[in-house]
Length: 192
Image (cartoon, rainbow, N blue to C red; front, side, top):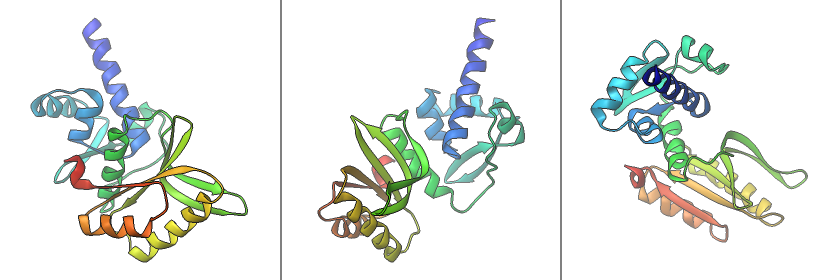
């Protein structure tokens, strides 16, 4: 009885993480939910296949299927996508920053009459907003446009800007474009 209740709760927590974060790799689920060894994590996730869909992109990537969405009242329909790396990189930051309770994906961030930007994620820590941007396959010109909006906002409010990108070369480009802003730029390799 006790064991099945714990198992139910673990399943529920995994499904809720997928509702919040859209797609998670096996290793991300392993970290978030303390699933132990790779073998144990695979076993746990396999036992939940009635609620999960998955595909391989380096490692197995999981998302909610119809039954999983119904179980946790999720309206967002997710499918296998080539954009999954974007989500996985964003989720690496979510985990690295300690799973902030205030974390929200795809947020309109800004101030009326100054500038607005759709941040990939926003969270608050110690009274300071953190805007998260993922540079996976984005053109640098689009990043530059976004950075200029953040620059306008920085003149009237304080926040931290956090980027994650694919290569050290792109990291250096982003740091140069963000000069004068409170910014940290990671590469995906920083988390693997």
